[in-house]
Amino acid sequence: MKVAVSYLKSQKSKEETLSLLDKSLADFIHVDLMDGVFVSENNLNLEETISLLKDRQKPLDIHLMVKEPIKIVSQLSFLKPAYITIHVETSNVEECLSAIKKHQVRCGLAINPETKIETIYPYLEFIDQILVMSVHPGKGGQTFISDTVEKLKSLSTLKKEKNLSFLISVDGGINKETISLVKDYVDMVVSGSFVCMHDEYNAQINLLK
Image (tube, rainbow, N blue to C red; front, side, top):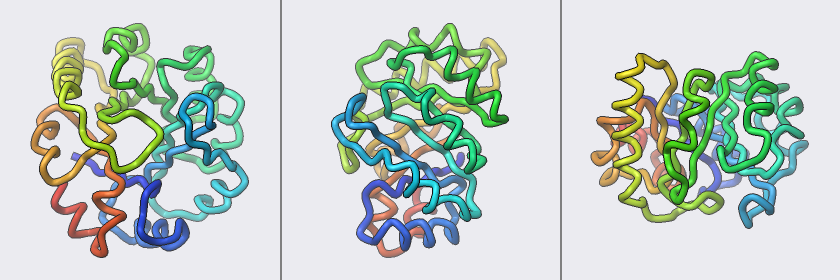
């Protein structure tokens, strides 16, 4: 199981946090970008984001919590991320996924806690990652929503039955307790404050792994 770490909530500066993550055991740096419309928080400063991330060694897993992701896909592709994930609740989903692929980037779909898992089914053979939100998107440090486990079970079963290759990922409230609830059904977990609000990043990542 892979671990992606979000730097959204940290006790250190963004620069220091990213530098530590680059040297850590994390498999990916998870990049949360929000527009203040799709979610209430807004950190969508592309110039700052690209400057912070352009020379990182770790692969980037970009999660767009924005209403119109297609407008920024081209700019973000400059970073050569491993994944760009958009929300299934946004508009022009198919067009945006195609745009991501055209930039030779793997595409993902995220799904909010209230959204039925069936909403993603039309895209299963096209996407490379499904990011199941186990908290409400937009803020770090929330408590894991237990109903998420059933979604992950369903996806895991469907993936095996249809012999599909998408990555199953879960994001929100992942720590040394909740990891046991999801580890049998996911390929990757996203953790933020559990790692970045701690002094020893690798110790926390190892607890998850």
